[in-house]
Length: 393
Image (cartoon, rainbow, N blue to C red):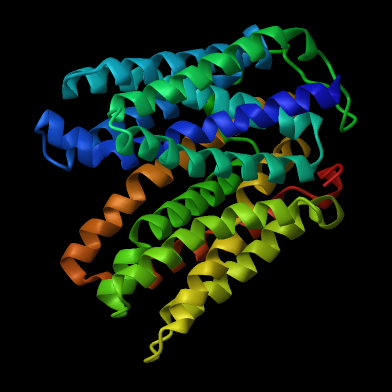
């Protein structure tokens, strides 16, 4: 039973990644057809992010009332419907309206699945599951490219992914009996009990530290990926083709790193995995900012940052039930997701504003601020929550 459900959850994580790269891949064509400014993609992204943050904050209430399986299935269905709506849209206003269920569905399923895996499965599965998310995010641009080069239009790219999501919804609905109580990690899912208020969660020992760690990580990861190629070209004088290749290797480093981390995560434990990741990121940041006249240090640094980033997100999530108790983990993971989305939504544009005023050469320094934030907050968390509370990690 546990193995069958785990396979379905793997498919769900691929599905989570599929929509994330569609807008960026299709926007040049969509923008031209709808005759709107290029910057309007940011409006759609902000609406999606707003819905995602809201549904993440509601995940504890929803999961305790309906269960993780049903919340996951309905959330995937909402995302599928929104993607189908995108494929039928002929105006920018329509895209904005469909972005609302898009974001609401994405946030709820993300928080519900992450908590379910954190409670029921070993750390290696969390690493591999987030690796599968990377596979989904990597595949969707190829789906959109197939639709565009085949003359099918960007609408068909969205429609194909929507159909895949609908198929997954059917599988999830059929699997609902499997989402019962399991004791894979020696703890049970706790869907009963009172719904915690935001003030109650924030006041728990260690929670503000983990929220700031998560905020810093997602701000660093998203800003690194978005501005890497621009920094290499405009800040270091590297040719555009090479810069684009190494910018993509940053994400490949995260995906490949999570696959490799799965083989050692159970042995090292979540806390050590996070510390090792932060150490590798720090070395990568140093290489990225070295004022040398050769190209290889910043290129190597970018790849190192990708590998160092690999274990942090999965390990923070997986450690949550052990840090704060499985009865509180859904509420805390929901707020962690909201904090993560806030970092990834607002910090990359902030750097763009700073770069426009003070120059893109501040890129390594801007990123390093979040690395320091992560290191300090993570160590404060480790001191606040005693190691003996970390069960099985």
